[in-house]
Length: 395
Image 1 (cartoon, one colour):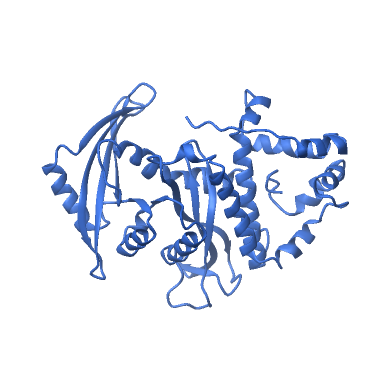
Image 2: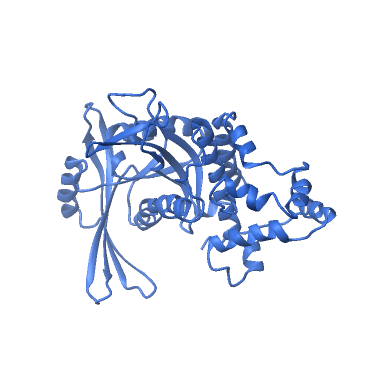
């Protein structure tokens, strides 16, 4: 359903259970009948979501262990994990006791969010590493659950599941606070956190003063197809920050002023700034900015946006049962991982050297092949036992 981007359970019966699909299903999975969408719903309503979460984490772990993603590490050491939240379901009436609520103009909205930790790469991979659902323990909470609270739970689970994985967390300004700094120091993680003008006033003030006094901590970098984009980097190391609990942290700040010609030929300048626990120097600021800080947007563009608007229908109500809806979410993550590997793999480029136009078109081709392609049982088994190698572009 998700790989073919059908968009609803109803489409299972209409498009996946008929015709020659039965033969292929028997060959691949050793059963005679293709399950109905209602059967799937019954199963997912009973299955512990932690089991499917482990499948999702294991898929990405497999890519790491097989060194498929080693070429995408920052500074040759750190896997970049972008952490961000998104909405998955919204209701006009209370859906369950764990619903989050928001009231505006006298109307109350009930909704469910999820906080995602996705391993992201410059070429567009966005693999789910772990998920944490943002939900209230009981109705009528005086202080609702939020992304920051969910982050602390997610971080503990992530460290427990991947205790020795070297991570660089790419985070937005919500996480620019002392407890997050301390947690990353405790777990041995690096971080690049967006630093806005209103965030951490003392850190911003010290950066502005010290960056003028340290002119050697500067670098000009030209990029773009014709070198038309100019980036001016400045940085300050070892800034002391005292959080609200009177705990001191040593942080660094990296700023990039990017000047880019617009359609009218006029230069427009955009400011990017991050707070980090990385030691900044001329040799690493460009890589940290491009592949550590700005790459955070991959979780939005290649992650949530694709899953919401690229045919996966993340926000569709696949089930009103809370446990089943979580399991559908994990199945979607599995399908998205498989689709990314297919789209960016060398086998796809061999078969479709000119591409197929869009990932939705590829999903359509998979659906039509599933429904109409004729292949003997012996040929299927031969495919399943054959050895092959898939490569990915790391440029």
